[in-house]
Length: 366
Ligand code: SF4
Ligand code: SF4
Image 1 (cartoon, rainbow, N blue to C red):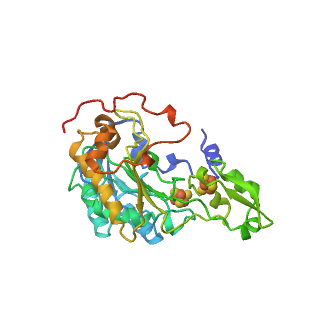
Image 2: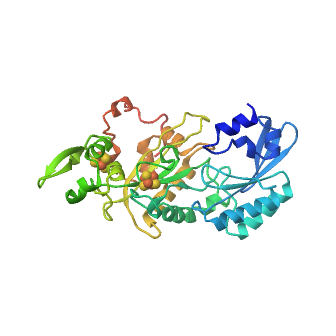
Image 3: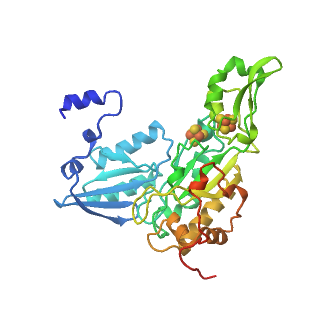
C-alpha cells in the first residue's frame, strides 16, 4: 500500500503502527527465533539474523500524569533511541538492542519508583478501569483497590517469589467490564446489588423515557405515570444492577455505599496455549468496599494465588488447574463459601451446564 494512501486511511484514528516500530523490529519482522527471560523484568528476543532486542518491563501507575510520561520518554530517549511501548496490562516496556542499556534502564526506572518485573511465571501489573476517579457507574474504586492488591503481591512481580505459570489479574469497577475481567486468571469486579432509585420529580425533565426503557438489557424498565407525571417503573426482580439506565438517565442512580462492593472471579485466560481460551467464573459474590486499603479483597486474592501456587503443575494457569482438580476442591482449598449466586440462572445457562455427575477429571488426595 502506498505510504500516502495508508496515511489517508488512518487520518481519523491512530497512525499505522508500522511507522513507529523500532528499526530492529521492522528489520526482523516475523523472523524471531526465540525469546527468554534474562532476569526479573528483562527479556531478550533473538532473531534469525542474530539481532537481539532487550525489553525492560516496568510497573506504571496506570493513570499517568504528563510528568510521568515525560520521565518515561526521557529514559527511552537516553537508552532506546526513543522507543517504548505500553503492554495490555499497563506496564511500560523499554526496548533496546544493547544488553548493557537494559541494566541501566532497570536501575534508573527503579530509582524513579517504577520497578521492573512482571515477566514469566509471576504476576504482572493489574489492568484496571476508571473507578471513582472518573466513571459515573463505578461500584468500587479502581486505582485504590489495584494499588492495595499489587502492593501486597509485589514479591510475585519483582521475581522474589515464583508461581506455576502466568497470572493475569484485572479489575473492572462495574459489570460493564471496561477491564479484561472476563478473561483474566483472577478478576476483581465492582458490583451494585440494588436496583436504581427513581427520581420521578426529575425523570421526565432530564431523560427521554423511550430511551431509558430501551437501555435496559433485561427489559425491566416500563413507562409509568406516577403522581400524574410521565415517568418509569422498574420490575425489580428483573434488574441485574448493570447501571445502563443510569448511563442514559441521571434520574436513576444506583450507587449505594452499603450495597456496592466487590466480587472476585477466577479462571479466565486469552491464551490458546495447552487449552482453549476461558471465561472467568464467580469465586466470591460480594465483599464490601473497605477503602483505603481493602483488606478483605487483598486477603481473597492472596488466598487464590497461594492455593494455586501450592497445588498447580508447572505452566498450569488458574483456570486449567481448577478444571483439572474440580470446582468442589477449589472451594474446599480456598475456604470460599459456595452460595446461591454461584448457580447460573441466566436463561441460556442450560447450554453450558455440566450435564454429568463427574465433576473432576482425576481423583484427589484428601
Ligand atoms: S467498568 Fe463500569 S464503572 Fe468502570 S469505567 Fe467501565 S463503565 Fe465505568
Ligand atoms: S440497572 Fe440495568 S437491569 Fe437494572 S433497571 Fe437499570 S438497565 Fe435495567
